[in-house]
Length: 247
Image (cartoon, rainbow, N blue to C red; front, side, top):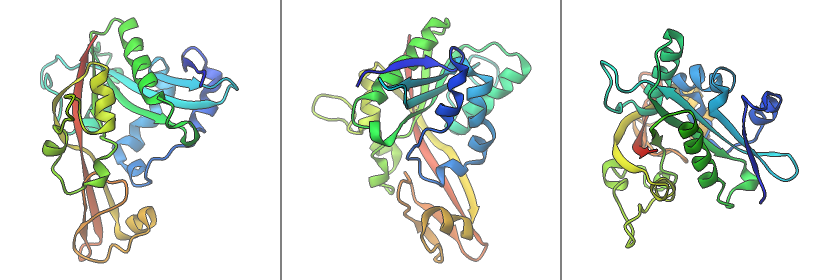
């Protein structure tokens, strides 16, 4: 597949096509309140960090979002346990206050369903890294969502993330793409994303009954969802894996 990678800063006219690209995210993931507050701001407020790929027909087949933020400041300096949620909050707080960023965090790499299986994830990850380097940054970090972890929702992330193959690379395919690009595991973001909803919302998002107290395994979830029928809600706390790549 022949592709062209651009940023929305370079080609703002492609914003509708980028936003309109079909993806495969589970519905409950898109109901994270921090993501709902900040994720959609990246293409318009940080267009230099919103990359997209077009195929030879001009169709958008992938996009990759990242955010610049200040890590080496008082009260931070270590990658947060709240992972994806926290780095989004930090990035837009820094933007509002005019705080100079020193690090770039990957936020998402999304491939259109029909374009999956062509190595575009690695291409977009490399483009994100090159974009950060071109802007003078020395490090890219990522709260990585291992893409095969949903098959083992009850396995602790601390165990899963450190599994390696005979060649020393991670067993998980998405962690392996990051490792091949030179990234190493820093820590586990134990509460990278938190989604709380009523039982009716969880039923709508998943098609599951959510009528029994305890842990519910949900397709696409990296950990079980805690269901509290007596209180009328369920909570999902997703662990991710912080990876770092010097530039």
